[in-house]
Amino acid sequence: MSKGAELKSEDLAGLFKGLLENKVVDCLVLPRRAGEGGKNVSYILVRDASKIDSAGAGTAAGVSASAVFAPSFSVNAANILKGWTIGEKVGLVAKPCEIRAAVELVKLKQMDKESVLLVSADCSGAFTNQDYAANADEIGDWLEAGPGGAKAEELKGKGVAVREACEICENRLADEAGADIALVRANGGDGDGGKVVVAGLTERGVEALSALELPLEEKDIERAGEKAKIAEAARKKRESLPTASSVQELEEFLRDCIVCKNCRDLCPVCYCKECFFEQPLGNPVGGDLLNLAALRGAVGVPTNQLMYHLTRVYHVSATCVGCGACEDACPKDIPLTRFYPVVTAKVQEIFNYTPGKEVEEPIPFTAYEEEELEEKLR
Amino acid sequence: MGEEVREKEEFEPKIVGFTCNWCTYAAADLAGTSRKKYPPNSRIIRLMCSGRLDPMFVLKVLLNGADGAFFSGCHPGECHYIKGNFYARRRIAALRTILKQFGLDNRFKSYWISASEGEKFAKTMKELSEEIKKLGPNPLRGEIL
Image (cartoon, rainbow over the protein chains, first blue to last red):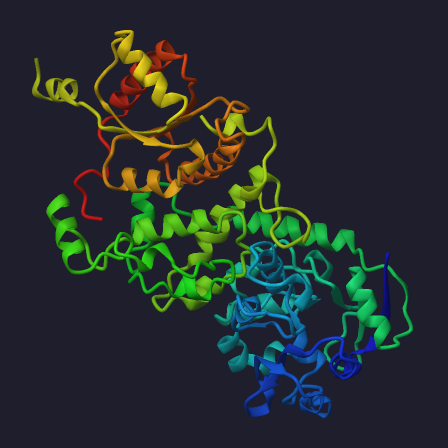
């Protein structure tokens, strides 16, 4: 049970205004509808509450339930807040995968826990934002929860598919991320006219909601059955994805990679300021490249695809939230979802760790048990 | 003797080892001073602690064509720096999980060998060398990556 209140979905914009007006947060990062007919969903960083256009609720431009719950993914919003939250309190309203990435960034000390208020919203799985914008009328504001919803299947037949990363995502409900506040869709209705339960998951979350003078009561947002169903289907889907099982296959998979490192830049949990692959050893140019060619006789250029991706998958092995931002970022359309989330899930499994679920749970590489894992070493 | 068989017999694997200064490196030293014989296939790189092992080192040597790689440190609980090998163990477990996905895990081994176990070190190197010989050369050797 969590402390929460039920709102009409058109009142959601008012909730966000309230957070700013009551100084619960100094600014808010929010999804909003923009572009022609409000079909494009992207983020804004708001300081002035009057800029939150509640009049635009519905499918028009503006901040509304239909923007918050829209099945559209542009960037991982945690990436926007990475490395600069200082002092001022920033609220982040985003999908569970984005909030989970933010939680990992808190653990990695790339985000200050006291300066962020994390608000996670139920997700139904998402299309890339360009797919969504192009088909917004057909897709609507919300997909049926869980995979294999009729609408999603129908669209798939037309070649507009939910992102693979979303299909293999096991944590799509708001309270599965380590957020302060969860936005839960209380009924299956689309957009306006629907009900949203706002629930405080942490002490800070409940405090924030109390400051808004919402009538808080005990709310049951557990939904264990639905979670189990989503997780089961996602696991099945993940296991059925074709994944390289030898170095040769991996080489083939990465054949088109131009080592632009966009996947790193857009990855919320890849955070090093001085990436190894920007340094001479990791990014051979000029003389380094000639030396390498002398060593091997010949060297493929651009070089280092295997080393780059294998190292990166190790670096994010504990913290990858499987948001699929890497795949969206790839200019060569390499289906990186079949690599990063699939491989990292295996690592997370041996540590029994779900990134971003619990703020207090340490990242596996920063902790240890005295007796463990011996069977995994040989 | 057929050409093929001879070639197989002549294959001498290159194995890169990452060992801890306080235990396994000393064990290798002990194996030497007590004149234990073991195959000369391994090239040892001394680390101050097994916790210094960046899994990237292992990826690098394997992708650059080493036939095998191993890591060896103090027994868990006996680290010179108290807990370095506990952290190393988690990293190695993660690395091996990734290597396993791509069929490279049989070329990377990990051991705990203390400073007094010169005999064990020699025996381990012998077994490792034989095992890698059986696997044959690293298919990535000489490949244009």
